[in-house]
Image (tube, rainbow, N blue to C red; front, side, top):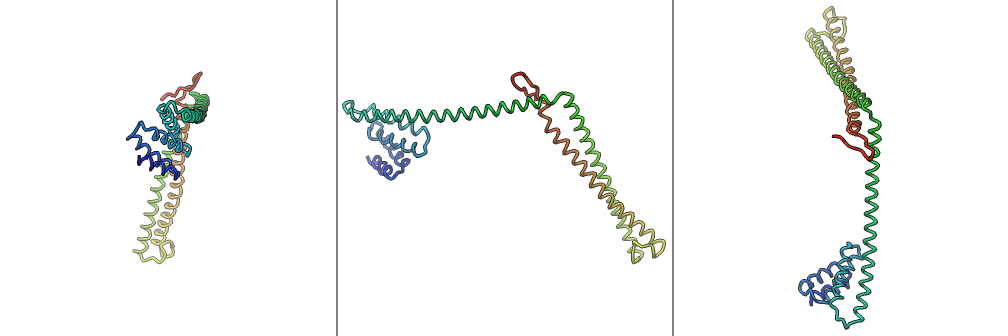
Length: 252
């Protein structure tokens, strides 16, 4: 059969996957062909030993067993060889399955240890959060939120003062230009010039003080709100925990 010959050629070149594809196509056409079953066992075994999945080894064992079942009972020598191969394949499969089972047990043990550690951590959190402590923290968070809001409000008012100072300074400059004063900040040009100068100085002071104080207040308010939010997130789990003798119950 041409497919069998093509598979054999690919196998000789070391391409187990392509060889097995040809033999599987041949198997669909002749499922009772002993040679095809023998080659399929070799192809799947080759793929397994070249990094394939355990299923490849199981298929190799299955095709070898099918090959043995269809062998002529009088062909004692060939049957003995195949039986020895089957024994070796079964041992190899058992070792591979044992390794997989050991890895799964280790993984499950690690996951269980992580769950126990997390449960213990939650218990410690719950034990460290009495109702009085939680109430005190809530009160602190409330105070921080109120303080943050008040500081931001005062900061906004200070920025309004800064805006008023800037407007006053602009007005002083405009009045100086209209009066033709050489230096609007100097009182040497008469009473009107002195008044305009005082207005400009007042505007500058309002702008500087309002800007600096407003920035500090707003920064303080935002910081207070951030601290309050961080504490609320940090202790939220504690408020929902109730320790129990054999574990932790989460209350949502």
